[in-house]
Image (cartoon, rainbow, N blue to C red):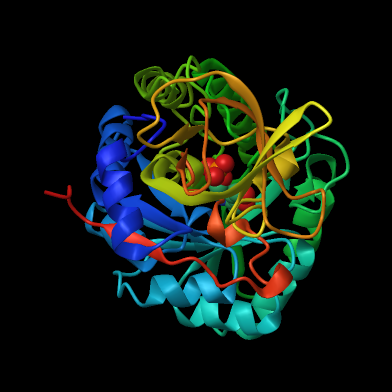
Length: 388
Ligand SMILES: Cc1ncc(COP(=O)(O)O)c(C=O)c1O
């Protein structure tokens, strides 16, 4: 579990020759290993809902569905992809701070549990339904953990959820709604966190918040959704998340909150999909410029934008070239000096060499700027079982 590269050098070579470069390849074997390891570590009262935004590849969704996953969607497009899986009711959630009416209609028609982000969502759902409808309320908490890469945004002002201190006023207004009933709480306050104790500190704070809302406002929660944020290593030497410790901690939290008899939900995206993917791109040319060695590649931020957003490169290896430690700036082919995939250590390179970027199965191609400069969109290859 959580190797940096889903495929060995020989397989990367084979995939590049068979499908051309640049391309993405995803491993069904790794997807299954990630899901089953996490599932086995968690108490049975924790439901796993894969966050489709991490990677909506249909084969990946189908593999997770076959393993019993539920799904977290955040757009009408994602709802459509999950609808195609023909799941039994109750396995899909719909979140997002700016839900259009068309999207709410679709979610409600599919029987999806909506995560309401504020009173407007509650009122709009109430107007769209003609029978009692359970929703979860997303709360933006007043607590956070140190979140190095600022994806979620800490406990300051936020577009997500209703601010914790505004919840009592919202609940007063919600008493006027005819059909909508708040039956769940949703809090998501971590991103790429590999330290189980930090995740559990947040989860504990969420359960305490739920208990206060239960005691002070009589809310009966069927579900408490703890969001995603389970981290993965992006460099050798980074310890993977201890899923056993996470599972044990969640069991202890459930035991410490006997008032809550419903289910917990985790919505991991990165943890389940990230390790499945490898991005393959060749070196187009090498260039030395005023003391910097550039390797200019077939693809850049049009395919992988995460290094630009977070400052953290994906792990990279020069396929078939062995180890080496020459400082190398990886540039893409786009006409902007923002087009960088990182400053890394690599062996001697030549034009045509194949580079493999690991852990690119989540927030990879689907987050890239694929339209910029109109390069062809790379193929995504699903390797369902190990290549022989
Ligand atoms: C509502 C929601 N759930 C789950 C996730 C998945 O987060 P991660 O990939 O960090 O597990 C996200 C990511 O932005 C999200 O917005």
